[in-house]
Length: 98
Image (cartoon, rainbow, N blue to C red):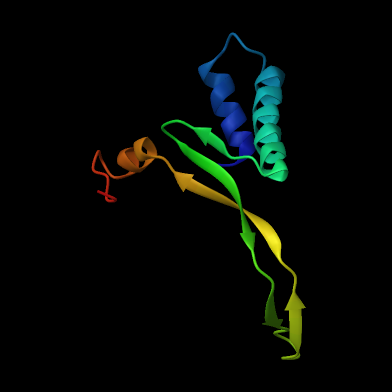
């Protein structure tokens, strides 16, 4: 689902809200999640999942065109772990992790 599809679906399900207001709410939620990850915070949405930032160490990579070694610096990458409720919904009420 694209961001625009999410906004349209939420606006259709909530006809008492203006489309622009729904768009601002979605933008604000996504911006706050992004800002929290930038700060190194964890964002947990109960029943859905948790967003966090994970550190990835530096490594030696290869340039696919030339085959030369390239030093890849350490960085942080976003990580999402699905919550139990989401996993159960995706698997018809059965949690495969159990």
